[in-house]
Structure formats: structure tokens, C-alpha cells
Image 1 (cartoon, helix red, strand yellow):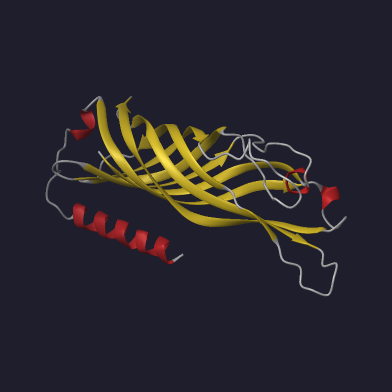
Image 2 (image 1 turned 90 degrees about the vertical axis):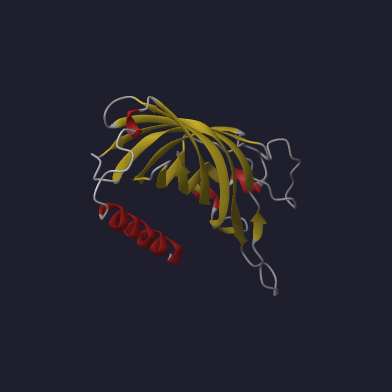
Length: 234
């Protein structure tokens, strides 16, 4: 939570410092029909899932939980001006993410029961399509809301990996879609625009690959969830 507080402080500092300037920097910047740039990303990834009712507290399975980890990525950006306050943004990203699933089983001996860990790493190629609704510009900054969809291909999907009761694997289909919502700020400088952005990305539909082993068969449906913070330069 500390890094979120630091982000708030940095954004507040940028707003105050740019608002204090007497005149607008690069006032015609947003009139360009097409703009290019790049982005640096940090993320935390989890799994959104539901468990089959008849699988918990029966046999030996007691609990399933998702564990999140930090990740990172980078990408190229292309921005299209659609109207005075509306843009369409796309591009191509490479993003690295990890989220594990812990399976806790009922203790059947005098020794403590250790959870089985399903490691779920992902290397995504992403193509987002995002609409931005921007506020009016206040001297050298503005805020915007965003919504859209993202196509992802996971180069490291376990869909073809061998699995067994002693080799815990839960696979997600390599081709997935998500819906995205979020917000960001535009800060204007002499030669570029800087945009810190927060985006929540939720997978659409059930993206779990079915199999008959307990790790996947205990789950009704599953889809990835990604909280992403980006620094965008255009």
C-alpha cells in the first residue's frame, strides 16, 4: 500500500507544479490526429475463480486460494483523436505476470499438511483497444477515464503440459480477452506528454482448460485479473 501512497503524492506534486505555470505548454498538442509513444508498466495479478460446492470439505480438499505477485511490462502506443474530448488508444505490449493457486488438503496423518502450490506464470502479448474520455485541459494537465477491451496471447500457457495428481497444473487458454476500466492524468511538457494511469483488467468468460485432475476439476470457472499501473510517454 505504500507505493500507492507514493504515487498519489507524485501526481499531486505534478498537478500543483504544472498548474502554477503562467501559460499553457504546447497548447495545440492534442490537435494532432495521430500520436505515438511508449509505456512502462507494473502490475499485480490474481485469479478470479469459483469453486465447485461439492469439492470442498469432501475427500481431502479443504481450501483453495489465489496468491498475487508483482509483474512488469513495456509496450508501444498509438493514439487516435476522435473528438475534442475522446481518444482511441491501441498498441502492442509485452507483459510478465504471475499468480499462484494454493490448495490446502485435510491433514490425514500426524505430520502437518503442506499446501500444494500451482504456479501460474504468464508472458503476454497484448493488443488493447481503449477509449478515453478526457476532461477539459486545466493549463498543463487534465484527467481522463478509460474503458475498453484487451486481447492477450500467453506464450507460456500450460495447455499442452503433462499433468497428474502429483504434478499440480491448472491451465488457462492462451488466447483470452478482458474488459478494462481505469483513469489517468495527462501532464504537458515542451516536447512530450506524460500520463500516469491505473487500469483494472478482468478476464471475460471461463478461461480454464478442463481436465480430470483435482486441481482443475475442483474449480467451476476461472479468469485472470490484472491491476496495472502505467507510465505513458507520447
